[in-house]
Length: 122
Image (tube, rainbow, N blue to C red; front, side, top):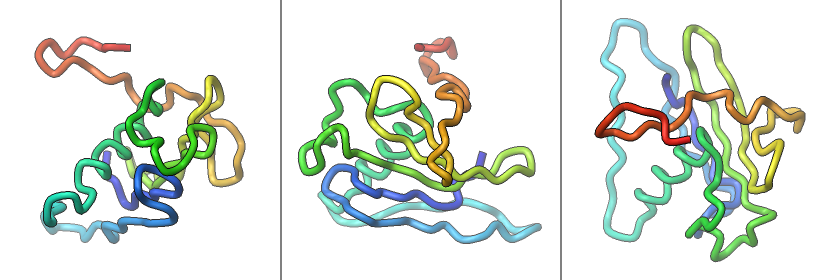
């Protein structure tokens, strides 16, 4: 899976911010490194990506600026030749939405796994 763009619509200290990794260039290495000073938002970006894929945690530490019901993270991913744009919101069901605001299957992305065992964590 390749992350083309990460949208921090309302997440952590960010409002309406995007990180665009650009198009993949055929035949070229495709590695991106995100760097910056302390407190710039690198960990927030990583958590936003995980929350986009797997859902925003029940007690998220990133709801301090935007109330839980308004949190929203999105992006564009590429996998198996398919491009998917999706947004994740914080609620109990239908948390994954397409660009048309229609619900997508909450489990569209593979489950998180325990890195030490490789087993799904749920």
